Image (cartoon, rainbow, N blue to C red; front, side, top):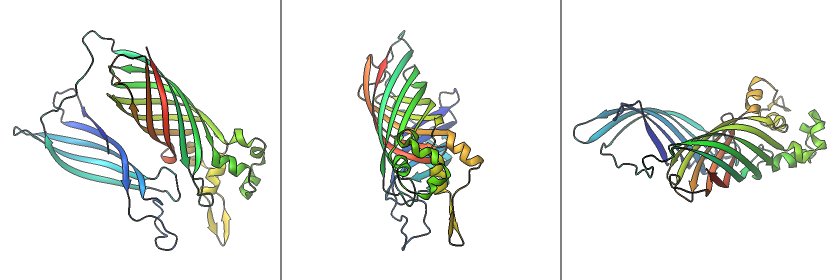
Length: 303
């Protein structure tokens, strides 16, 4: 799990630090309809893992640093296959490490420009599942255009516009599923109504060739999500299936979008360049619930 750790406070050796990590995990017991039916957390062996920690540092004169931490760990498969409720854990941790700093070699020269503008275009190919009845992964196309300011070659803050198209939504709108009876108007334009668009705020920590990104945004248009909600939030009662009802939680998840990504830049982000191609793997979510996993390729223009 590649991680970012930063001290909290202005001291040279801060007493507190925060750590964020994003990686992959292998889980040996997954959902199985006959052998493990009650396990709804994950249905795949390989899963995403997210870890966030706050740590108290105790410095020693012997060249070591003790760490006591409290954190949160999440495992899920990024909605590639259902069920996928995920594993969520709160953890206590204790560790020891050398307090001798390896050091991060900065290419920033004295007097150099410390604020830059970035224009980024990204194209992603994602995969997700719709429901237990539509559980085969289908592609999601993702296009994002963003403008950012980069401070000291380390912190990128910007905003973007994204457009997405869900193959599962299109297939559902062209099917004869009874859930369509509630919203017949969606059937008229299946390609358009299977898409979404929105605006987001992007935050990224840059470390040479690697960047860790977190976005939060709002869906301006995502009409087929109401069908998604009805299918996945429904339940059986007395042998009859009742679709999920639209409530306040649906409204929040319908509009709030989030994204976690690990980016790899071909050129070192602190060096002088105008164009920089990059690749990334990302996890998109509706609020905190996974929406789809995506492999992305993009290019950055800096000035």
